[in-house]
Image (tube, rainbow, N blue to C red):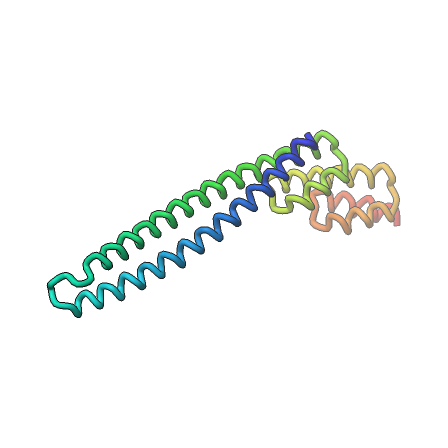
Length: 173
């Protein structure tokens, strides 16, 4: 599972680089489109100033065609970027699921802490926090020392086991 997580991480890095490249392409296309639209507006202005004999007709049509190609290229680049983002989100979600699965299999304080460090706002974060609190509560209960209960309450001041921990600490003090 760890190898698969690492493979997904490498793949996500490659996709991020591709998305960055697409962002740069979109920016370049946007600049080209703006330049083409500026040229088109200038050509329209010049064409309106000329007599109806059609002096700038070919240039105006060429500018329109170039602006159209720039718009199409920018639209394609945006669509590619959207696809990359959706794929990246799917990979990130799968990576989170694999990481939580790995933490659940290990079922240790360290495993859940690692998961929460990597995915503090992940969909499985509330479950990981609850499992982590339960493991720490069991550890404090097994030690049954004032220091152990104080540490538990520092780590989980608003946890679901707070009242029970406070009661056990008060019995020891």
